[in-house]
Image (cartoon, rainbow, N blue to C red; front, side, top):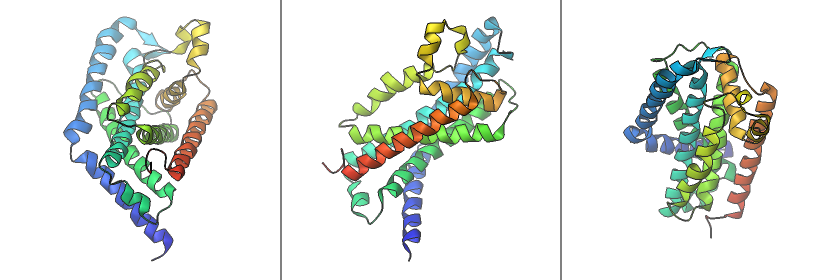
Length: 258
């Protein structure tokens, strides 16, 4: 069997394990985000949105749907990888991967693909739920799909890095609570940054989630506060930087071999 065939079997095995891991407990992994987002649609979209009126030429609920979908993709992609990798560390079965004749990129790609699978599935479920409250007319399928997948890849890698550094189960909840949640809520999900004073508009531009939300909103609605090319540059830049850093951590065995 060639090296490529061996690598493919290994990659497929990791991805299958990851998918089975979250699909077996779908009541805990897939259903809660759908219920949570349904509440967002009801409270912010219907109740509060009816008082706000239009935003950027769209009903408020239509305006926030792209951000809410992407928010569910971000949180679930991240959560899947960080919990899986840390559990493997805690149970000491990640050593089986480390001693296997596999390149590090296969290990990383397997975990990231698992995170993307959960992020995409939850994102699709939330999208279907949103159809109960609004009609989606996708402006650009290519942009929508590209941002959908790239964002999931980015936060899957971020979850991997968090898990590598985590020394306890508490450590895997610190970043989502104190970093991820503020970034998503302040990332233009519920408002256009043009509504902010000039100073806070500048501050908002330092938030990478802003570029993802606006690019995804462009894909669905055709409007964005950020130039589309700049949004893709930022997203791809973070994917490359975090991906390279994760590979370096694996090569050094940080948090795993020590």
